[in-house]
Amino acid sequence: MSKWPHRCQLVLDATVIGFALALCFPITVNWIALIAGLVAWAGAIACRIATKQPIFIKPQLLYPLLSFALVNALAGAVHGGIAEAAMSLRTLRPMVCYFWAYDAFARNDRLQAISTAALLSLSAVAGVFGMIQYRFKFHPFTVPYEQGTGFCNHPMEFAGQMQLFAMLCIGLLLHKGYRWLPGPYARLPLMALLTVCNVLGLIAADERSAWLGFGLGLILMASLVSWKLAARLVAALSVLTAGAWFADPMFRQRLEPLLNPQTDVSTHARFTMWQTAWQAFLKHPIFGCGPCNFPRVDVGLRGVELHGETFLAHGHSNYLHILATTGFVGFIVFIWLLLASVRLAWLQAHVQRVRDVLTGRALAFKRSIGLAMFGALISLAVAGIFEYNFGTGSVRLAEWFLLAMLVPVQAPLQALAKPVPEKSARAKSERKRKAA
Image (tube, rainbow, N blue to C red; front, side, top):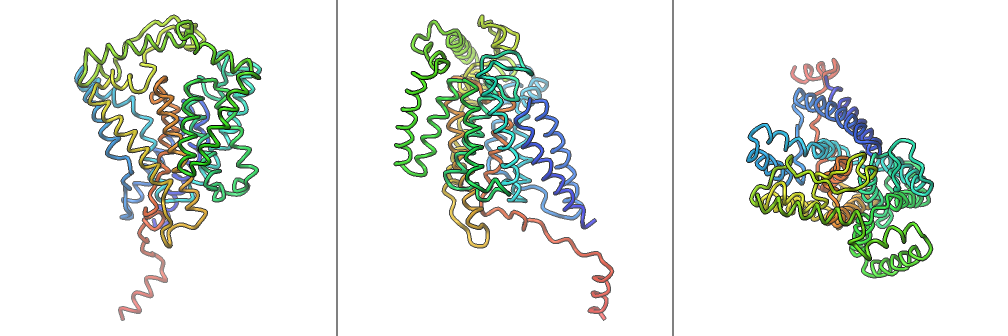
């Protein structure tokens, strides 16, 4: 029995790495990998109970998450009783990956580095494939979008993921956290290549809100390292944007409609959905209309842009959608959750070395993760003004999986487990000898 806790933990760690590899694929693959991980987690918990090990490590964002879940359940119950409360909670099921991954990461700090290497390998391939789709209009697996989708089904979810993964690469470069990654990933040339591939994926997604969010997030992230670096980055981004405007017709074609928003179909759709969300909030200002009751609006877009449909059922904005569906109460809790996440990332970006806990490279890795998640959260928050990326399942899974890596340095890690009493015959005979 003494070997089973270790074996169960190895299986749990393997499912975490498998989930990291699955994140770049369609949402169905994500769910299969997550279910496998939850089953392994249940087995690990059973082994801990049997051997009297500590069962649960409290995550950093436990209370904001539970509060947000409670508000969603109340908003659903107000309009449809227990059944709709359960359906409302079901909309938050991607966040379950946070508790599972946090438990695994807190018990094995090296698992973060291995999972990061696995994730960035697949995301780099997805980024290159997305650029091929974008430039050559090659979509063998999805509807023929004008944008790149990587291995995802829609450009929006691809853009959200690429914001996260590109920020992760850049954070590892800025604080040199890549040196703690396994094997060849600890070398600068490979890390630089992975960064370029992920940024190409973000460009290929061709989502203007994602570009804006990424740019602002990158500048703020750089400001945590050095104000001089942030100033240089602003200058570089300005030059690159101007150069792309004159040199790349596809880039210019994407931005030109913003000069006259009334003629842009997608901008008109956003205005329509924002107005719909605001009206829904005014009708139900306390707890909103319920997470499952956002009005469906026909916005007249081409079918290919909505995956064969012409209607939208979300607010096209994180903030207006949350306001409409959970009311003022839910909006306040959502902002608390967002700010708590940003604060946690900021604290880890500035974490100091603790004696006998972290090596220099491990500390650089932890600071890199904090820095990357700070920039990624800002990026998604800014893009979320214009998109409902918080409600995109694959983006939410990736976001909360990476947030689970924000484990405090003081966490007990591998030392958390109590030693299991030895059951060997030699140990028994030794105890009998001492007793005699």
